[in-house]
Image (cartoon, rainbow, N blue to C red; front, side, top):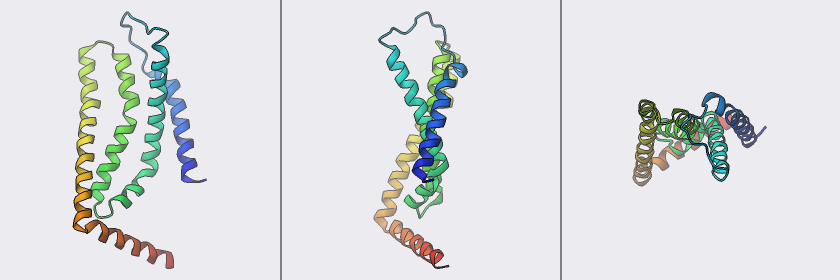
Length: 161
């Protein structure tokens, strides 16, 4: 089975399960107002997109690290930072928005959501911005090309064994 097929299967299974578990794990808070028939399709669309993004995020966490090692051959730390940041940015939206729906207007709950989700999302954005700058600096200095060339030679050596 190809990696693309594996990604599609993992994404679809996780998305379907997450979509149907959402109202069970995150029952909507009773805030005294129900969505209108016009608003309901938009809320359903967000539910589907959050579940699909969760599935894609899990697939990324399963298959993404080797790709990022190729993108960042000169720094394992940078590859790990990108991997964890991208993974968090993708998988966190489903529980994040589910918790918002369940929380209602409880300010204490909103603070918990802010510290569990909003702050790490901000940190992940800063980490990715720094990694992009660092990749550019490595590319500009020639370190990236040297590391990529060394990686290609190592792969060629393994292929001849």
